[in-house]
Amino acid sequence: MPFWQTVGNATTSSSSSSSSNTNSSSTSSSSLNSTAHHNRAGGDPNQQNHGELPGGERSPTTVSAATAVSLVAKSLLPTRRRLKLDPASKLYFPYEPGKQVKSAIGIKNICKSHIAFKFQTTAPKSCYMRPPGAILAPGESLIATVFKFVEPPENIIERQLDLKSRVKFKIMSLKVKGEMEYVPELFDDMKDQAAVEQILRVVFLDPESPNPALQKLNRQLAEAEAELENRKKPPEEPAPRPTGEGLVIDEWKERRERYLAQQQVEVGPV
Image 1 (spheres, rainbow, N blue to C red):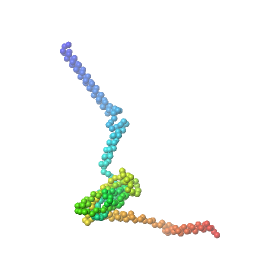
Image 2: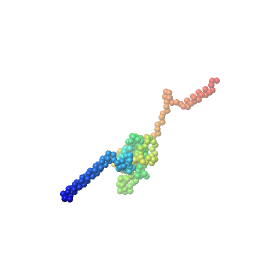
Image 3: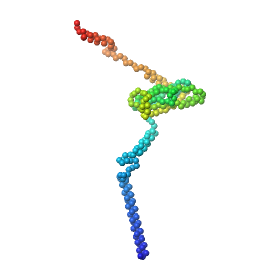
Image 4: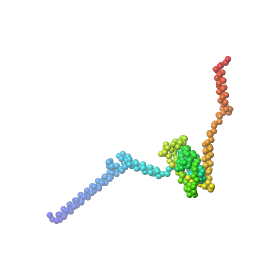
């Protein structure tokens, strides 16, 4: 065969092969595009999004992860206060070694629900509170008194350590349903709903030097004593209810008159 025919046939064969490969690539690209379009439009029913079950439900793993994230986010948020304290974070005591000293703190319910509160301390043997706990109605307030015995220091160094007391107090709060009598067991029964309202640090004041904090403490202590005296007073008895023209009924006289009238009816006329 002449060489020009051989070259021509080879060229024709190469062109046919290239055309076939081009058509095959076009067909493959069209198939991929069609599949992608099908997945976007409706998708393969056997393929689901990650974390979803048939019917659009989330898998338990996804739900657990979402719950964990929600709990972490909630824990980072500041706790909403139920009580307003005055002072807000400290308990001031006059420094008088060898004596029992007193502090005071105002507690007010700033919620729309009844709130129970109670004191806790790191030194229960040398401290106590009055009242140790109570239930406050919305907007109600009281002044609590805190008693503490101050140990006499053995030297100046110990005195300086006493002035930086490590004793702390904690106020717990709990939302309750309506009016009820306060009992400490409330916090044991509903400990999951109790919240730490505030941790109070003890600060000692020099009773011999004038100090605004000491003056305020003395005012609060006087108010607390006045409140205590008012609670001790017996309730006033209601006055006898007058009848007629303001005269009090003589019960004995009334009974006697009824008795005589009954006797006359039974005996009858002679």
